Amino acid sequence: MNPLVAIDARMIEHSGIGTYLKNLLENYATLENHYLFRVICPSEKTPRGLPADRFQFLPAKTHIYTLNEQWEVAGLARRSQMLHCPHYNAALLYRGKLVVTIHDLIHLTEPTFKRLPEAWIYARPMFALVARRADYFIADSEFTKRQIVEHLRASPSKVSVVYLGVKDHFHPRDRALALERAFSLLRLDRPYILFVGNLKPNKNLETLLHAFAQLCASRDFDHQLVILGDDRRWKAGLVSESQNLKISSRVLFVSRLPYEELPWVYGAADLLVMPSTIEGFGLPVLEAMACRTPVVCSRASSLPEVAGDAAQYFETMSADDLAAAIRKVLGSSELQETLRCKGLQQVKRFSWRECARQTLEVYRKVLEA
Image (cartoon, rainbow, N blue to C red; front, side, top):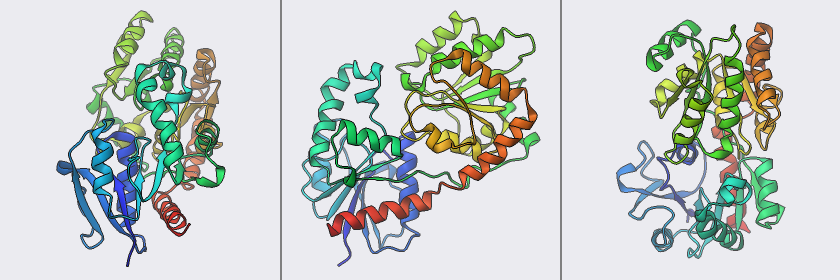
């Protein structure tokens, strides 16, 4: 009989993990394999276009990060030989083989998150339980694998690094058309620097705001900063900081955009800035590179691993160094073109199809163990 593999896809509409789940499932449908997939997902968010002879959808009712999810997910997966959970809130009561993808450990390592009540009440105990229960871990990067080994005491032989990919949706667009479309969409009339991601403390946006304030003090600097992302908990503080720095008129916060518009917004940006202190992977770096947008990013965590030699780096907590890096890229058309060309080559190293293929190989290894 073909092995039954359950996949906890309840977070399929969440930005980062949702992207991961959607691309895995789409590629599982096209790659040659002998698995039958039981996809646990919200009843109103059933993925479409997957072959019914290989994919069964099991509607889930409970919310994530609740006690009830432990019973429901384990119950829905009970007839499967293996369960793959894409996040650390894994179904600990499930009795088959358990594979867990860990994207980052910021609740254990990032100072702001470590002090939060939810880190002590939920994240830290859950990580400890998952470390004992999981048969195997998947990490997005070598950096995250090292953290799993160090903080969860997992054996290196039980952790595989499977890089994420970037969809063909992200590709170079005509620059003039991109500018016209993005300026109209964002209601801008000047060039802009772009950030894409959530607004949590590990994104290090305060350093970006301070660097941008330095640049705005120069008469020859005319750019706007577009921060594309949302987080009700942290946004107010960043808006307040931009006001204190007297740059609020040049900082545009955009909560979200239609997915089809993202390549145009990347393509029209003069550069993407990724200032994070911790990233499990850093997908916007690849998305920007695929759209021929130069990237400036910190030297922290997984970012050098993902960006390679195709980015201009800066020292993570230094607003001065970040401002200098931005100024250096914007001031040299030759450097911009070098970063664009290197970025397109770097993107070729990452593929959702290869991500799915390597994940299927993890399934095989775990089921045969």
